[in-house]
Length: 415
Image 1 (cartoon, rainbow, N blue to C red):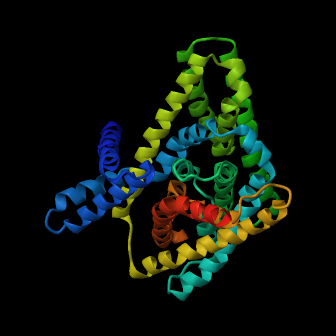
Image 2: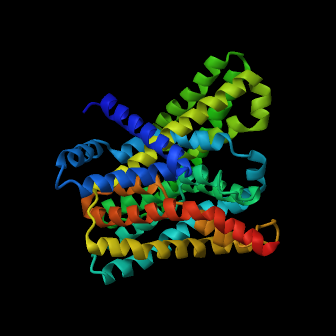
Image 3: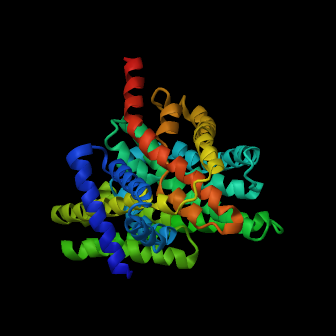
């Protein structure tokens, strides 16, 4: 199938599943789409002995889609920019230091905790995975996914100050997590035979610092162009060109594209930017355009996550490891968050049981699956991918559906 046919099928499926969700299930869109996609995939697998054509068609479709490339080099730039565009910059700025620690120290700490514990867990279950490859699993599963988080927290009733911490952390730790993953990936490729701390530090600085600087530059360029004209059609086009061209430029310069898009989105969404560069009509059209992009790509992404199950290898060992990995990953996240929360609890007004809510509300999503799919076979790709998928599905469905109830219970205890 050609690209247009694949894209058409995905959008048609997303529209049908979206209708079923809104009409009957009435769940948050991202969760509903993934549940229906999972159900459809399991149904096709179940009836494959009697009617194999449907299952083979779905499997053929999924196998032709490079999930890692589609998300990391396509959808992610749109989703991160759209998410950052509507984040309250003032609230984010007031929580900048804890968010910075959550997104750096938290991710790195969680990576090594998950890596160490999973090394013992996997080998105890008879799954032979090296420590370095377990660190890769730690790196790809530690960052929370801003795409999943943003879509679900809007309907969870989380207090604004806590929502800012969770959303802010997820927006930035995505970029940091990808940099950590790439660093460990390169070590794994070389067999860890040559480790240069200076090279690792330079890579980290280049990716992170370059991504932030590029995002600032893109944001200022968009500001200058939009301030000097008053045409909403062209100004919407400017934001679209900034996202697509900026992400491509970041890749060419070896900067972090995700961080560049987050910073650019925060700049364009900033109140001063809006009031000094956009008319009311332009502001309305820019917001509506990016809301539509957000809905479209989210729908396709979560349908894809649900459909991916048909190409996974569900050996009993992998399933058991995935189920045990769920509480292990949550425990490591809670431990990684503990130090930043303790440092800032006295100076900032933290919501009661912040660690518990941030641990449960820190959802994993498509980025973790995309990174797992990028692994080579000699990096234990098959078991890591299956285990990652189990953790992600639990995170989105179970944690996503219950985080709102958890917040209400905590609020009830305090009243």
